Length: 138
Image 1 (cartoon, one colour):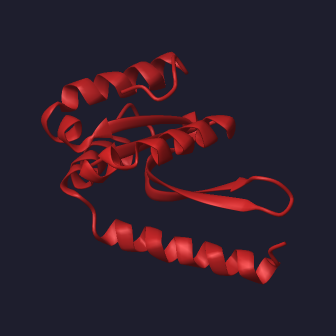
Image 2 (cartoon, helix red, strand yellow):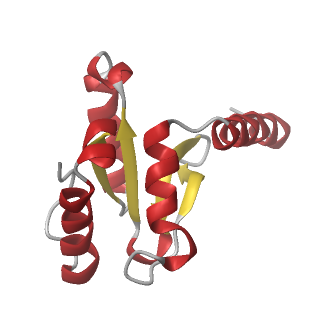
């Protein structure tokens, strides 16, 4: 059983990692952030490298860092680079876990964001304006 001190220690490690990722974004993350920051995308507020705390049970807390999060719609966006080709199973488990906690997780490749923004924006529009039409839209 984890003690409160150990949980806080783990959270602080996750928070430091999220801050490090915010300071070292990929080109796709910079591009996406410029498109959504300051409520530019349909008036929705977005956070980047946002920590989501999920209480698994009375003794276990899991922290996820979303590349981008829109709290209003419980929507997470992940931008997948080459590494995600090697961790498909982990990504699927993460998506299922987020769905269980009421989030929808949309995944886009870096190339989609950088070179096909109109398509990405259309998918986000359908979700944001039309509600939850499906999980893990790609």
